[in-house]
Amino acid sequence: MHKISNFVKERFNHNQNKQLLKEKYEAKMLFASQGGMWKAGPELIMLLGCCPDDAVIIDQYETPVNVNVLELQKEVQMRWQEQMNGWLAEYDLSNNKR
Amino acid sequence: MSKGCLVFAFNNGMFDYVRLANSCSIRISEYLDLPTTVVTNETIKFDHNFDKVIILPEPSNNARFFHDTKEVGKWINFNRCDAYSITPYDETILLDADYVVNSTQLNLLFTVNKSILYHGHSYDITGNTTFDVANRFGVFGFPMSWATVVYFKKDNYTTNFFKIMQMVQENYQHYANVYNFSAFPYRNDYALSITDSISNGHFLSNENHILWDLAAVIPTDKVECVDKNSYDVAYSTSVNGKQLLHKIHVANMDLHIMGKTDLEKIYDF
Image 1 (cartoon, helix red, strand yellow):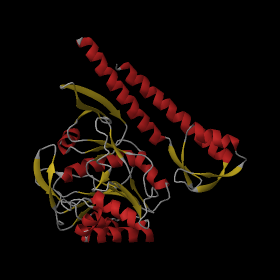
Image 2: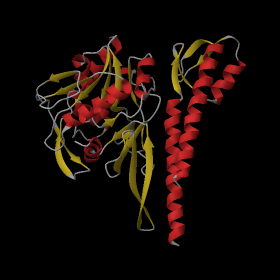
Image 3: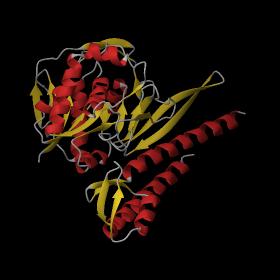
Image 4: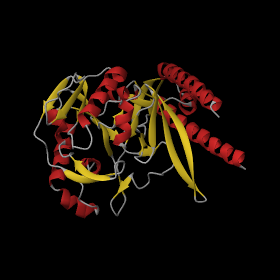
């Protein structure tokens, strides 16, 4: 019984750590470029993939910004990949603590 | 354009805010590569890391209950609205001394291209308290803007913003009646929230909000330093009348540590 409650406790800690990592890395996905604020992620990558070379898109402050799509796409992908790698590394580390 | 951080530190006899501010400034230099100016009321007698020390007469103060020491103490917080005229920098991050800089995240504020920015939402990193109450104030649940981290640059918008904040402070009892909250103790968070609404034409807006949320540790949780940039936060939950202890690990992430005794331990002075 004691073992089960301990397991439940550890499990709960892991879940909270996972939630905290999400908050942390979501903040790290933010960056400024071409006069707008962006959040790197699949949504923006997909959107930019559908746009012509120059497009007006809405930034995180809901401001329309005229952007060079290829340039922004490159930046978004780089930031997203970088932060996802960091996220995975930290997640694995916290997983090992269980 | 000069950039820097501004920290207000008036000792109240319970906590050494000047030392807290100094530890804060060491971390600011390390992570953000920025100078720090401290605003205080007494000459600093130890070797410090501040770029500038501005000595002002002690402003008016309140009394408040400190949850970690379980005592009522002086809370000297009346001159935040003067930050605009006090700061020696063109672009300033105004920080509370209990904000632990543990990453380069705040440097992003200089790239946002806004006149003023502050957090519109805070959360308890343990997830143990919802913070719904803390993120709103007054009987009508007006949304809170947090004065813990305020980025501003010197321009017309910010000049007016701080003038409004000064006006709110001077007529605090009136606003307490309008928004239906207790006028004592005076809270900069409330004054900032009301100013946010007034400066946006009495509309609620996210225009001046920092895009990520303010991570907070409440005074009842215990923070232990693992190494220079990581901490363990211990907290307890009650399940079927039993107290269960939990721990989470925080690394390379800024924290608003509300319990000052924990801060003194972390900074180890």
